[in-house]
Amino acid sequence: MNDAALPVVYADESNNTGENLRDEDQPVFTVAGVHLDDDRANEIVDTVVGAMQKGAGEPKYSLLARRPRGRVLLMSAFAALPDDSVKVFVADKKFMTVSKIVDLGIEPLMFADGYNMHADESARALAHMVALVGPVVGDSHKFTKVLEAFVRVVLQRDLVGPEAYVSAAEEYLATVDKSNGSSIRTALLPTPDWLDTVLAERNSGLHPDTLDPAIPAIVALCREFFEIIGPLRLVHDESKVIDRNKELLLTMDQFPDPSDPDCPMQTSGVKQIDFGDSKNIAQLKIADWVAGAARDVAMSKLNPPRREVSQELSEIVESWLAGRPLWLDQNWLADRLGISDSS
Image (cartoon, rainbow, N blue to C red; front, top):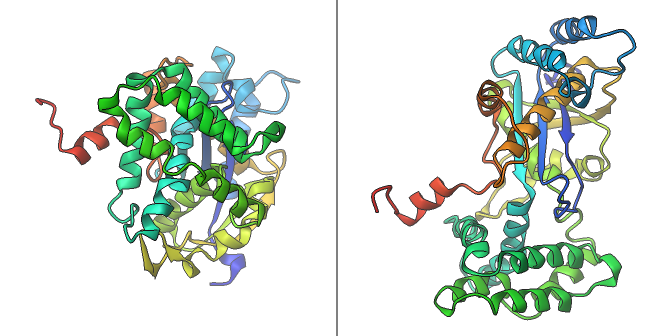
């Protein structure tokens, strides 16, 4: 198919702090994709803008959502979206931090020993287990300090070295009962120097944007649309990380699948990537509204909740979800471990 004739998905993010996964003010990340023709998108945006007060400013989600009238306009716009024209991906940055510790620490060591933790999803299960029980079986504050130290070390902030992470992990593990500590220790400290290896690979350019949720999020989003509309062109709101990783997104199916290295990865479905500005593109305005709504719903599901949203909005956002969220899923873990509701 000629690239000019490709169906287009427009994408925008909310609460992206890049690789800083431990920003307490922005604990979740969302990215939204919108597949709408120009006429329909302009009609939806024009209806909202026409109902706003004159001089109110650009119709960003943050502006609309803070007033009752704006929230009504948003809900009307969401109701006008055709089925499968919108998808969102959601990540809990705290859970993603734990997942990255597992993926960069124990998983490659096990793979070198001949065991693939992605093939049977044991890497995901371990991340779930650590995220779920870590703050309970040990000091929750010190558990959080481990996650903060991990991010600081990987980002090499304030010249903090791997020893800062080891120290934080040991302080936390000292609070964990020995009957629960073995698997958590293995997850957090598979070897004393595992983070040295991560930093060496990162500094060599092997792992650019190691912690940024934008890449796995946009891949999941585009794969969802690919199943519906086939190969697509992505128009993303200006994004340095997407721009840096364009080649990866366009050629994913030329790299081995981590769960089965003898096979290529599934395509992202993206054949061309361009960038745009929501001031000029109606679909990007709608993507901003969708990403903002998904962010607020995700914030309402944190423990403790950080937002209050209506049940109606929550159900709408859940109908948009793409892929498998980077989120602690206790039901999945229970099924994985064979734990029934009655046990």
